[in-house]
Picture 1: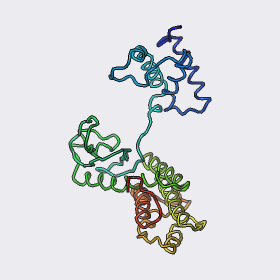
Picture 2: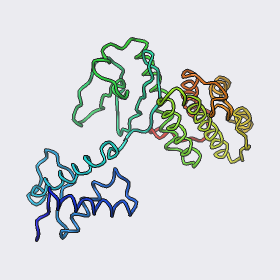
Picture 3: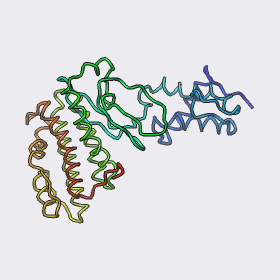
Picture 4: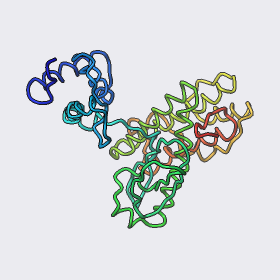
Length: 302
């Protein structure tokens, strides 16, 4: 059997050919490294290639091809960079810390987790018995141990408050079986992206938050067995839900979120603070509707 190349022109040609095949088949970039291992294995007669290249000792038949697995992974890392990374978070929420905007990742977890907010940077611990401990401060994108040490009490409270809103809201958007909720989840991502981009995108961010809120309200109406009104105003939708028995405090949420299409073109002013308030209110809306009996699924075990 011909040895499989792990470097040089032959390896490069093989990887480019395999990657082109996977691209034509519609395989997304983050999934290609594992798919490429399978392609190489088939090409060389069902070659046993490990899927990882960590420190764990493997059977001899896999150990022999560990360098090949590492070479395939390195090729994809070098070729696609950050695009190869899979975002395992359940979502993100924007918050204001010490005058600057940051995004907070909502983690995907299984089993028991003890969430805390402290200035001390916790080391990663191996999986074992008992609940894990997660410092929510370390879920803030671009947070560093040095910055964490200097956070004020107000900043720690802001991180925890954002987490309390974002955790149930993101899981509810993901877990509730509704096409409108899935689209609303995408609208939240757009709101976050525009809010974190530049000042001239604050209006676009608030508009995306309005779109998310509108779809969430309409999803709640459908789940009650009714047909929603084709309006972009939030109050009539909230009033319709009240008539269906889903009553919740919505006045301030509507005030924070509601806007007109003019905001997309800069014809309606929108500050950073207003866009941030709309974004956070759109997630609070999800939680309040769920708690009011809208038929949403929390997706966190209850």
